[in-house]
Amino acid sequence: MFKPYRCCGGIEVNIVYNGKVATLPDAMTIGQFIQEKGFNPNTIIIEHNNRLIKKDDWSKLVLQENDQLEVLRFVGGG
Image (tube, rainbow, N blue to C red; front, top):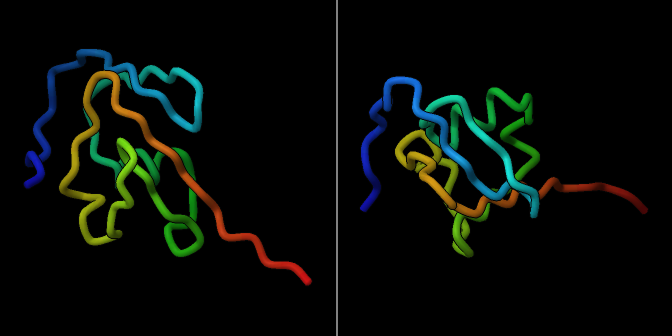
C-alpha cells in the first residue's frame, strides 16, 4: 500500500502543507516530517491527499512531489 522510505539523494520535494507550498530538502516520511517540525505526535492527526493516516503508518508513507498534507492539532478548552 505504502512505498517504503528510500532517500532520493538530495532531490527537493515540493508539497502543500496546511495550504501553503513547502519545499523539503529530500524525500522523507510523514513521521520524519512531523519530527522535524517539532509536533507532539500525541496531539495531532494527519490528512494526506484527503485521507486520514493512522499514526502506525506515518513511518511508512513517503511524501512525494505535490502531495497535500494537513496537520491538525487537538485543542482543549471549555
